[in-house]
Amino acid sequence: MGKKSKRNKKNNAGSLRRGLAAVPTAAPAAPASNISDTNFRLMEAQKYDEVLKVESKYRHLDTFSDDPAGDVHILYAFGDAIYADLKDEACLDRAIRYHEKAKERIDANANYRSKTSKLIESAIGMNLAGFYSAGRDMKKTISTHRWLLANGNRDEVTARYVIQLSDRFNLFEKFEYTIEVLEGSVDMMETLEEEVQAETNLIRAYIGCGEFLKAKAANKKRISTDINHFVDWFLSGRIEYGLCNYEAAIAHYRKYLAEVQKQEYESLSASRFDCSMDLAITLLRHSADNEAEAFAIFQEELDRCVNLLDADNEACEVVI
Image (cartoon, rainbow, N blue to C red; front, side, top):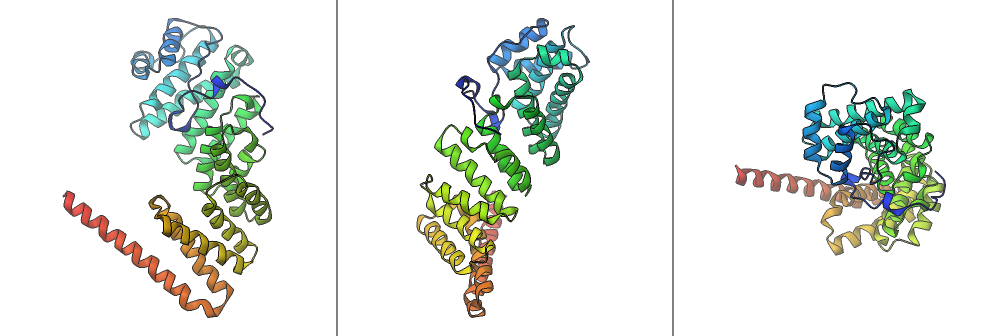
């Protein structure tokens, strides 16, 4: 993804529900019918419950007008409104089906694409990729992302969409997809926070793919911009471990754990556990003389997990 060109900021300034595409504020290219006009007005006002009333009335139809672009807009509006009112997996499946139908119609006929608003097409692609990632289908997520870029919609891609996708890919250890999405796109981030998030996700993906030299170079750049250096210590520890620089890795892990313990970051309890495990493993890799400390760390984390389980069970008993 190349450097972001200058574009209308309004495309990215809308409310991004759950990190997905904002509702486009541009009018449809060619309003097709009363249904299309009504849906557009309701979507612009974010009255999703009213859109759902229209959807319940016309969902049995396969087509809604004589204008192909109008059908695409209607299908998009129905799917987006369902996701906005998401209650369960069935709702997610319905939202996906509407967006898939819209995408299929765009792909099936050049006339659809020529008459469909670029903003709508981009929103369909970003939403559909987000839906697939929420449903844990990473292959469909990346194929939809590729479709979005192949159709020349790079300028409409939002920073939050890219970050969300990379978060999901890293969560499910599809690191190669994270690298594909983020490489060359960090410069499209519009705030320092977004830039740091994107760089961090990319570094984690490099580490996951065993590309430790790339990770080290990227982390060096990241450290120069991020004020939360304790996170850099954790990443640096994993990088140095991957490069078999165990002494350096141990030093970074110790700095990270000391900072987390000092600040009592509850939100980083899972990362603290991971770092403690990494430290213990690295100590064992470094020298047999470190066995006592390593096993003490293992025992400490085991005891902490048992205490957390006991606390959860007590809370459940109180509720009951």
